[in-house]
Length: 367
Image 1 (tube, rainbow, N blue to C red):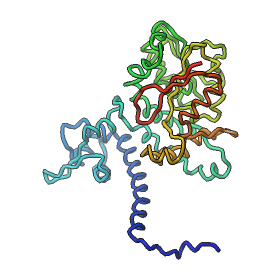
Image 2: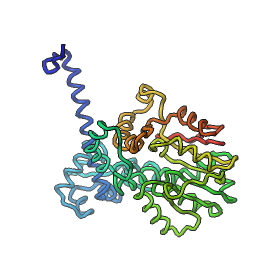
Image 3: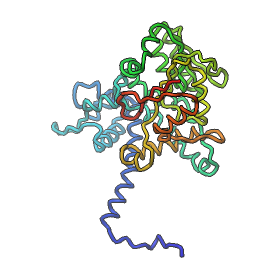
Image 4: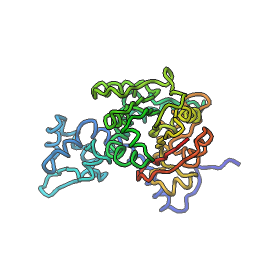
C-alpha cells in the first residue's frame, strides 16, 4: 500500500522544529552566499577593510558610491550572519571587519582569501536550470558553460594559497625538483586554468621552460593575457586538442592542480603524463582530499555537503560532459584511487607530500 505521507503523524514536535530549522538554515546560507558575492563584487568588503574604524551605512555607501538604503540592508544581513562586526555604542549601527574578515573577504594576496567561489556563484547556481536534463540523460556541462567568470573564479580560489606556498613549501618538498628547475627543466602544467602556477614558476625559474595545457578557452584567454602582461619568454599556453603533451619522455616535471577529478577521461590523461615524463621525472598531483566512503567524508570533512553539491553543479558535471565520462566528481579521487590509476598508467612510486592544506592533498608520483 502506498504510504500517505500527507497525513503522517509526527510524534516528536521538537525534532520536527529542529529539522525545519536545519532545512531553512541551508536556504539562509544560500541567500547569504549571494550577499557575499555582492559584497565582493561591489567593493563593500574592501571599503570596510580600508576604513580607519567602524562605518555607518551612510559612510559605507558614500565610500563605494552606492545607494545607502541598499547598502544598509546588505550590512544588516552580514552582521546577522556574523560576517561583519556590529558596533552600536554611538547610538548608530556601525560596521567593520575583524582581522579574520579582512583576510578571507578583502585581501586577495592572503593565503586564506576565499572569494573565488563566490565570484562565480551566479554562474554556478545558474547551472541548476540545466540539471534536470543532466539527471535525465546523464551528460553534464564543461567548465566553459560557466563563462569567463567561471575561469576567473577558479583563479581567485586557488592562486592566493599557491602564491604563498607553491615555491616556498610544495616544490621544496619534492625530491630534487627545485634544483632541477634552477638548472633548467622542461615542465608542463596540465589543466593550467588561468595560468597562475605556470607564471609563478616561470618567473622563479628563468632557466626552465613551461607549457600550460587547458581545454577551457576562457581560461586560455585569461592565461595568455596575463602572460603578455608579465613579459615572460619561457612560458606558453596551448589547447591539448591542438597540441598534445609530448609522448617522447622529454619532460622533467608535470603538475596537475585540482583538475584530474574534473576530467571526463582522467585515465588516458594520466597515461599521457607518464609518456611525457623522463624516466627520472616527477608528477606533482594536487587534488581534493577525499575519504574512501561517503561515511568517511561526512565524518572527516565538515564541508562534505558543500563539496558534493558543487560536484553536481560543476566538478562531476565537467567529468560527465562527454559521453562515457568517468564522472569522478569533487570527492572522487581519494589516495587509493589516485594511486591505482597512476600504477595502471605505468608509474611505480606514489608518495604523499608533507604539505598542510585544508582542502587539498599533495602527491609526488614517479615513473
